[in-house]
Length: 64
Image (cartoon, rainbow, N blue to C red; front, side):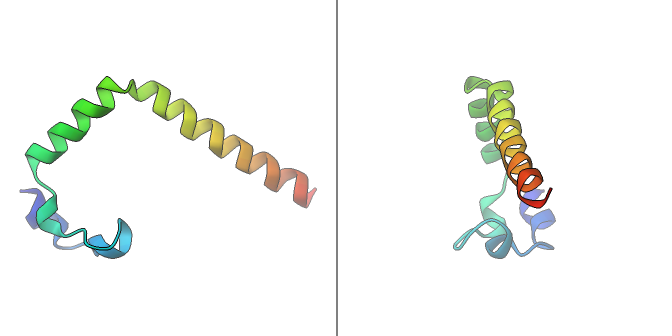
């Protein structure tokens, strides 16, 4: 299902060189979700949110 869905996207352009639609399948998706769970997804989200806030603070201070 996923490779057929991903055919409509430029995977190499969006994700990285060498990434092809056939790399996306339900087994791989399941493994990624399992790893995110083990790494505590909320912690990952917090790190992303903090990085975004720092970036926005820099933009705010630079242009105000």
